[in-house]
Length: 455
Image (tube, rainbow, N blue to C red):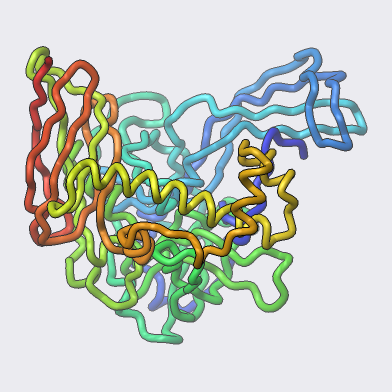
C-alpha cells in the first residue's frame, strides 16, 4: 500500500471478539452502533510509481469511479436525541492509496462527505447485522483526547429527523473499577464480521508513561479487541466507562493488551455540545474528576467558553484568546512564551542527538543553522539559564493558555478552578479586550457574549 505520508506510532490505533455471561450484556444493545464513511473509489491504469521510495509520481489514466459504503469503527449513542460518542481517529479519514503492481492499477479512496453513516440494530437482536439507518454530523472534535461527538440529523436517504427517544448508554465512573474486575467491550470489529461483537476482560489498571504525563491515563484490559472496536463502548456494570481506542502493536513481545479512553476524556467535547449548541448532555460528576487516578487536565482545571462579538457589526469574530494568571503582566507572559519556545527547541535537539542523529540531520529537519545546533549540543542543559517560571511551567504550574475562536466566534480554554484569570481577546481592527474572570468551581463555565470594540 502506498500512502503520501507514513506515521510510526508506539501504539496501534484500532478502527474487535465472542460469547460471555448474559449478566454482562446490557438489556438493550441498540445504542452501540457501527460507523462508516461514504467513499469514492477512483481506479487509474498505468500510474507512475517509485517503488523504492513508495511514492506515486503520477496517478495515470482514470478508468473507473464508484461510490461505496465503508464501515470504519464503532460508536455509542449517549443521548435520546442522537449524540454519538466515538474516537477522533474513527471520524478522520485521510485519502487511502493502494497500488496493485500485478496489473499496474492505482486505487484511491476519498471521503465523499463530512457526515458519517450510522449502522444500527433496529430490533435489539445482537445476532442480526445492523442496518444503515442514519447520517450523523460532527459536533465537536477533540484531537488531543482522540474524541469525537457526532449528532444524528437525517435518515440515510436524506430525510431530516429529530430523534428524541433513542435508547442510549449511561455514563459510569471509570475510576471506580477495582483491579481485576470485569470490563465488557461492545463494538464492530472487522474480525467479527457484520454483527455486533461482545467480549469481556479484566481491568488491569491505568497506563502510565512519564514521557506523556496527562495523556497517559488509558484504561488497560486483556479483553479481546482489534480493528473496528475503536470508538465503541467499554462497560462496567452496564454503564459506559470508556471508549476502546488502541491495542499493543504486533512488534511488542508478550500478550496483547487493549487501551481504553476513560469516558471523562469526552468532557471537552461534551462542553462544546452543551455550551455552543445547547444540546442536552449527560452530566459527569465533579467528584469523578477529583480522583487521584485521573491524570487529565480536568482533575484541576475548568473549561471556560464564550463568544467574541464585534460591537460594530454585532457579528461573531475570529480572535486569539489569551488567559493568564492574574499576577503576571502581558509582557511577562510574552517573555515566558518566547523562553519556553527556546527551551522546548533545546529539549528537542538534545533528544534527537541522543537518538543518534547528526547535527547536519537535525539542522536539515528543523531548518536551523548547523553551527547553532552544535552550540546547543555542546551546552549542558544544567548550564543554561532560564527564568524560574519556565521550570515551574514545565512542571505543570499554570501561567497562561491560548486558543482561537472558530468561525462562529466560539472559544473554549481550560484554566485552574477557583482562580481569577486575566482575559485578553485580540481581533483584527478591534481594540484588545482585557477583563478579569473568576473561573469558579465545577467542570465548565459559559462566559457568554463578550463584545470587543473597533478602533
